[in-house]
Length: 216
Ligand code: DX5
Ligand code: ZN
Image 1: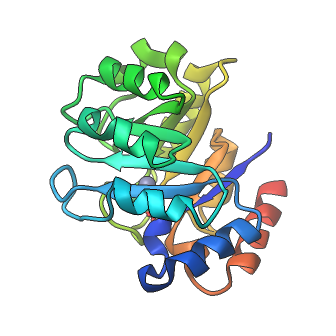
Image 2 (image 1 turned 180 degrees about the vertical axis):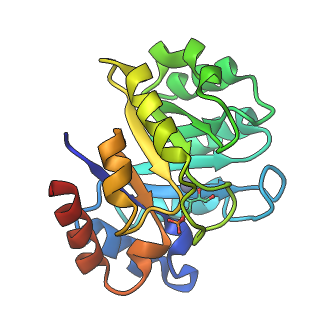
């Protein structure tokens, strides 16, 4: 299976974002994972659509926008206009899930749903045929640098089964590093997000190391 690597911008140096994003692009990452937090759905705050639009101008890599916000429906058009290629919405948010998916598709963006660690996969089932991505959170959303929750592995495996032969990317986010990568890929993940691990030290070496581990 072709595994995609999505470095999470959350761990970039925000005083040098252009430099760091170009580094991500140059070293063959597949997506840039853009974490959007509103200080309400999660305790942390990141950036909004205006900043995403500015970043869109400096790199061509696809933007995978992970919305950790209470009212996703209100902002989908703005993030799509800002240049998102994929938008994922938490099923735990206050948004009408079907309305969110419709809004994303209407903008020509690839739609996805996210489940937090305590959320059952059954919530996603009714929407399966409309999805291009499912994101399984392997930590509680809000912060980079947390440890992988071991129970995530069984969930990834179950999700891969649920997807069957549908064309849906299975993404994992949170605590993915040189040690946990093998396990999530073996369980069926094909898009791996990683922030603190990939941005620590040399991006080129780290992505290279990820590719080596994946190929084993
Ligand atoms: C957490 C974010 C993640 C975060 C992952 O809420 O959704 O994308 O950046 O960071 P690491 O890879 O450090 O766990
Ligand atoms: Zn994320």
